[in-house]
Length: 330
Ligand SMILES: [Zn+2]
Picture: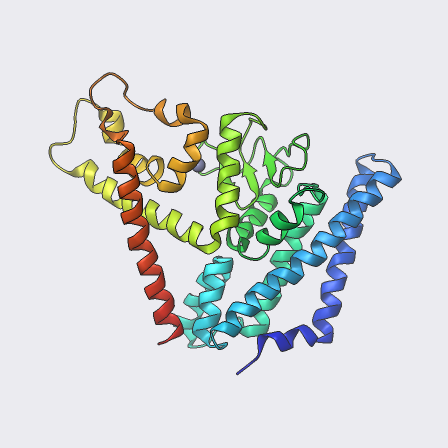
């Protein structure tokens, strides 16, 4: 078996890792100078970007190596780690394994991918100066590149998609998250948060919707892979239930708007992670209720919400644990 930790002694890997940090430093320096910042200011920002590139790349590799090692460095351990901790590399490798019978990346490949993702995401964090180093910055930064890595992979992709047209807001201060007023979104008019990137969010600190999106950043840091798994698990499970609700006979034809939005209501608005986040901007949720027309049943009593949440989470958690068990102990 390959011990993934032996990879850290590879000279070429160390050189590339250090090289990325130097590149991160230079890139930040050049961009800031072009933007007309003073030499001192540009240099300070560049040092931060270089360091976050260096440390982000290191910790992303460490957490990936740890879980691959934990699973005995088998194909299943690699794919499980790739899927739970980095999402896309694991999905691509599942297809690769099914097609070729071998992991596409192997242990070294997974660690190269982790290095690239950690370096890229880390660079943006340092360049945009989002972590509050005199407060909880170390905690927010390290959790984003270890336990919270999966959705920060998507965060990095959103940075890349938003390059050029997404207008980054640099007046928020060091609040542990990036914000693009205009940027990638799933649904027009809705903000979209992945990892520590708040995209398509016009409202800054102090607004309920801002706190709502920051809640998702916190949920990811605290629950890591379980957050994205259960969030999307719920969305799919109850979104599908909502689709059935739409075509089921006896639906409330008096309210076509809501009836046609069952997947949105069941999968999204009543998603436990959203119920939690919407406590900060309840009008954003209840504003969509057909108030006073007698069909407000979708705003279920709190007790029902909690019971549904617990049942849904328990089912999904059980499925995930079963999947992990089957992958790691085939
Ligand atoms: Zn939300």
